[in-house]
Amino acid sequence: MHNRRSFLQHSATLALGGLLLPRLAGAAGSFASRPVGIQMFTMMRMAGGDTTEMFKNLAAIGFKEIETSFSPKGPFYGYKPKEFKAFLSDLGLSWRSHHVPGAPFRPRPAAAAPAGGGAPAARPDTSAARNMLRQMPPMLNLSANLQQVVDEAAEGGLPYLVCSSAPVGTLGEIKSTIDIFNRAGEACKKAGLQFAYHNHATEFDLVEGKRPYDMIMQGTDKDLVKMELDLAWAVKAKQDPVALFKEYPGRFPLWHVKDIDNNRDKITEVGNGIVDFKAAFAAAKLAGMQHFFYEQDMVQSIDSVKTSYQNIAKFA
Image (cartoon, rainbow, N blue to C red; front, side, top):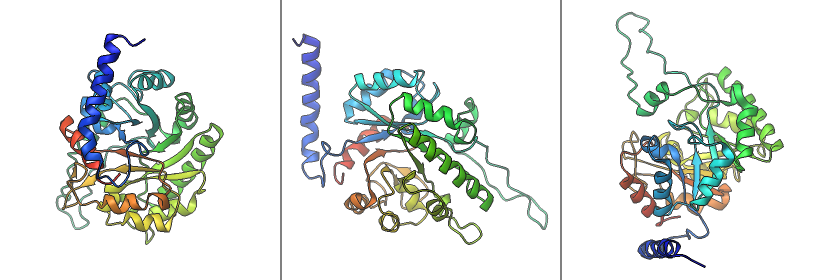
């Protein structure tokens, strides 16, 4: 029998749903068939506070799926993986994926002095994300902690383990990254997981005439190593996501639904930038997309999250 509290909670849920229905009516798809996920790097500025309240707020907005990375409280917000899964489940959230680096985090090196002398070129690093990383304890990574991160993902019942970034600046780094990915893919398969790689823009910068993204795609087993395409970073690199889907069909089960402004230098709310989400979602079957996660790097306000969620209804 429902008590008064459960009745009020149910009523609040129905009310929230009623507010959202007009926005969903014109959508190309349905949130019922495509649950909306969020990559928790979005919430990094708020992750040091009340964890329960933060996730309750995300569930109230309408998010259904969670992808984690790191946080001031650790990768699983102070929980063990199995406990964290149960915590999310109690809030009506499904934990789908977790990010780990491919190699130990290294601060960006200082710019070298020009060959002809003089001061080095100015290359300041003002990234809030990098500054936060510098202040956090070392994170586990695929290179040094492969089996541990796979075991933790398996303990949490995750379908996916994703490499958040990896060195691709030289042919040697690319070769090493490919080797790590193949080993990670094998380890994940044995544990009942799927391994995937999340791109930034740098994978599309030529290295000795070769594009690292293609080298990774061609050098890894297509069944063991899938991709999580970050739509905004691809567009920043002047890539067409649909063209990538056509070139590597079925290889993109995960997406980051992220937007970037007209100058391609600032991540913004979904729908307020230049990413063609309608075209991407129209090609979801070709891509092999199974889950997507909204991401907006370290939002300043929950209002940005609400705006993006509402705009996703227009094309998801």
